[in-house]
Structure formats: structure tokens, C-alpha cells
Image 1 (tube, chains in turn brown, purple):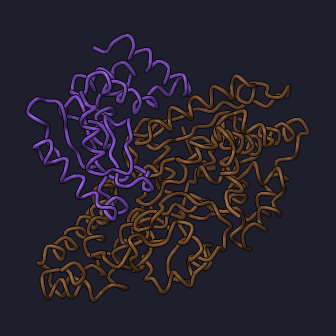
Image 2 (cartoon, chains in turn green, cyan; image 1 turned 90 degrees about the vertical axis):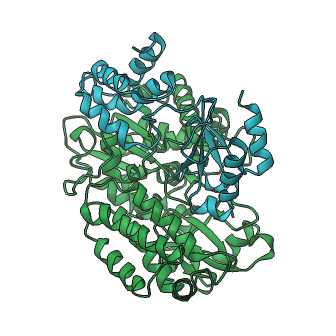
Image 3 (tube, chains in turn orange, purple; image 1 turned 180 degrees about the vertical axis):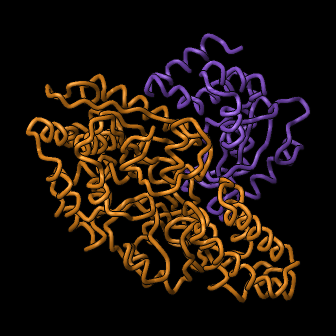
Amino acid sequence: MTNEVCFRTLHLPNPGSLETYRSIGGYETIKRIVTEKVPPAEIINQVKISSLRGRGGAGFPTGLKWSFMPRFYDGEKYIICNTDEGEPGTFKDRDIIRYNNHQLIEGMLIAAYTVGARVGYNYIHGEIWAEYESFGRALEEARAAGYLGDNLFGTNFCFQLHAHHGFGAYVCGEETALMESIEGKKGQPRYKPPFPASYGLFGKPTNINNTESYASIPYIMQYGGLKFLELGRPNSGGTKIFSVSGHVEKPGNYEINMGTPFPELLQMAGGIWKGRKLKAVIPGGSSTAVLPADAIMGATMDYDSISKAGSSLGAGSVIVIDDSTDMVKALARMSYFYYEESCGQCTPCREGTGWLWRVVRRIADGKGRMEDLDLLTDVGNNIAGRTICALGEAAATPVLSFVKHFRPEFEYYIQHGKSMVTG
Amino acid sequence: MLSQDSLAKIDKELTKYPAEQRQAATVAALRIAQDEKGWLAKETIEFVAEYLGIPAVAAYEVATFYNMYDLEPVGKYKLTVCTNISCMLRDSDSIVEHLEKRLGVRCGETTPDGKVTLKEGECMGCCGGAPLLHVNNKHMHEHLTPEKVDQILEELK
């Protein structure tokens, strides 16, 4: 089955409209929860049963995260939605906003009720202006319809939600950098602990989840956690949106059950373009390890299988690479990205990302030395785990995995000064 | 220093945040200022800082950190082409090449008549539409071909 959760309005006319969302029972779940005063602990329990894991890439159990928020706290608490999709290969949250933004709003309402927040922000990636504006319009509609504001559904539940627009910084997808950014500062990640649940936005307890995570919540609370879990696999509950890009005939988003075999997903995306052969796949966005064709063709699309195959599911950003691709040049482009986007706060990342890029570039320019391959591995290993946030590791992973799986291509470049693929 | 219209937009942004957190509107306020002025001159950044009641250096930090601010004059139209991995796999290089040829400038340069600035950008989170570019940070054009690029250029009057 496809499009059962976040894209469940997609087959209907005007899928993103309030009217369409209401026609499938939209906002009825939050209304029931609020008017029947469903205990927050019961909601958290359902989310835990569903096995929903953070869809932004880290895969942290959502129910567990919600349970970290202090229950008895007098001051303001916040919830934040992370729609700062800037990792190469990732473009699913944009389509949730385009085609089902009210489900996202309802998911945030349920989260706000559960953790006791009265104010929320949706941080939207700087480059998608049209979606920032359309989300703003959805907020207006929801306010006018009595779904956002004070004393909702005739109770004392109040929730106000705002759209916050980013302006071009990959690192702001990191949760604490994102909070710094909302506060109007450079997006540099904070040390953890303290974690956002105790010291988050404006120094207040804050819950932050990815767009797809929030948008899955109304389904879970409408049909129960078990039904969501059963769509997928144990430990990988529900559906997942896979953003397929690169060398396929039909790039795009495919919402499918967790545990679907990769070849089926590839087929949905029209197969490899131009009748060529599959060479490799980066399964979860540019920060996850590349997998050679054999490894991915035998895998199913869920956390455990992709991890067993040697990579991570990440945000489900599947970058498909055909056999005409020069892997050294591909890596050089990704390494430049991490060098460009490092926030500069931690020395191993600030210096290391530049070092990685220059060495890969040198090989791609035909000026590499055989010892460069060990140097890349050494530099990569010395960034990973030595920085405040995961960007350092994200920069090292592509380098380490490309060199590991496609070493002969790198060696050929060094020996012959040109690509063994493109000549 | 900024029009009433821009100030009204900044005031509207301020309503999203707690009254004592005026700094939170910095990213938006600088974007609004850039929309009006075309780019962010030192005086513009200082004006925004003063309007928000924050130190000028705090506004400089933001203006220099985020990629979409322009700290030097740009053309009437700024075309930013993504060349990251998913776009590269779908031959964004040929799009850049075509644009450079058509405009007679390299990436990072502005045409002599001041009309178009060409830039290379980082991932825009729309990789399913690769290759792609956006105009003036706002208008996204996807599934580019050289013909489609010609059409976009034609529409930039």
C-alpha cells in the first residue's frame, strides 16, 4: 500500500485544503482528545506502541522523546517542527506542506496538548519560499476555523503556531542550532546536555520533532498505535516517505510501508534511467554511508535492514547512482558541501571538512597520491565523534564509505590521472 | 532607511515571538530589508539592528552566516543553481554551462547591464525536481533543460 499516512489526502481533489482534510476526519482527533481530556500519558503510550521513530534522520523514538518534557513546570514550554530540509537528497517534508499541511498542524496540536506547550514554531527551510507562504495560509485557515488560538473547542486548551523562515544554513537542521536560529542568532549547535526538554528555545523546555513525525501523529491517535506499528515492522513502525532522486526514471516521494524491499521502491521510481545498471545507493541522505548495488538490492527499507546492510535509513533520502557515474567526482561534490556548511565552531569539523574536500579534489584533479587514501580515512576518523554536533560525522561518513567500497576507482585516478569510468 | 511597508512586515514578524525576544525577528528582518534594497549594505544591517534594539554585531553575525543574504550588490535577478549531488547526477553542470554561455558571465558574477547575477547554491531540499534553480531566493524552477532555461531567461525582463 502507498500513501496511507502523511499522504493520505493525495488522491483527493485539492489534497492540501482544509475542506479535504476535514473530509477524512481531520481535526476530529484533537477535538476528541481535548474535549474528552485524554490523559497525556495515554497519548505517549500510544505513540510508544506505534514504534514511531524520528523521521528527520536520527530515528529516536518519538514517544520516549515526548516523555522527557517536564510535566510540572510553571513557565512557558514550546514545541518546534523541524522542516529545515537541507541534506542533499531530502525533500519529503516540502511535499507534506504542499499536500497535507493541516495534518501537520493537527499533529502539532496533539503534541502541544500532550507536553503542555501553548506556543509552537514550524522552522521552514530558507529555499522553499512558496511552501513557507502556503503554510502561513494554512495557519490562517486553521485560526479562522477555531483550531488554533485560545480556549480551543470550548476548553481551556490554548495553542498558537507560527511559521519561521530559515535563510540557507544546513547546520540549522540540527535541533539546537535551529533553536539558536529562531532566537535570531548564528545557527551554531549548543552543547548537550542540557537537552531541549529542559533547556530549549528561549531557555525553556522544548520538544522538537521532524515534520513527517508530527504528521504521522493524527493517524496514530485516530486508529491507535498498534495499527500504525502493523503497517511496518517491529522497531520500524508505520509507513515512511522515501525521497528518491538521482538516476531513476521517476524521481519523487513514495510513501510506503516500512520493510518494503528496495527493488520494489526502485520499480515504483521507474527503475534506473536510460536502461543503465545500478551501481550504488546512498539510502538516507548524503550523510549516510553509500551501499554498492548488491548490498542495497538485498535490503528492505527499514531501520534494521539498512543498518545491517552497512548504512542508515536516515531521513529516507534515497540517492540512486548508475554505472556511468564517476564516484570520485560525486564524492568531491559532497565533500565540498560539508566544507561549505560547517558552522566553524569545532576545530575538527572546521579544519577537517576543508582537508577532506581538498584531498578528494586533488585526486579528482589527477594529482592524488596513493597515501591520500589512508590520509582521508585518518582525517575522517579523527573528525567523527570529536565535535559538538553530528555534522562532523556526516562529513566523514561519505568519505569513509566511498573509499571503502570504491577504492579501485580512487586508485585508478591516482595512477592514471583520470577516471576509470568516464575516462 | 526602510520603507513603511518593510517596517510593517518586520513588525508583523515580531508578533510571532515573546515581546522581550525582539532579536528572534533578525533573520526575517534582514530578509525583508534585502528584499527592499536588493542586497545588505553595512548601513542597512545597522539600521535593522537598531530597529530591533540589538547590537549591530549580532545582526552582522546573522547576515554573514546564512547563505541567502547578499553582502554585495547583485543584479535585478539572482539565479542560484543547485549543483549538489542529486542535481549533479542529473547533469546540473550542463545547466550551469548553458547559463554561463547565455549570460556571458561565470558563477558568482553579474552581467554588465546589472540585470542578472549567476550563483551556485547548496541543496535546496527539492532534489526530486533536479536539476533546478531559484530566482531571487523565492521562485523555484525544477526539471531544468537548456530549453527551459532559455524560457526562464526570456521571462526576466
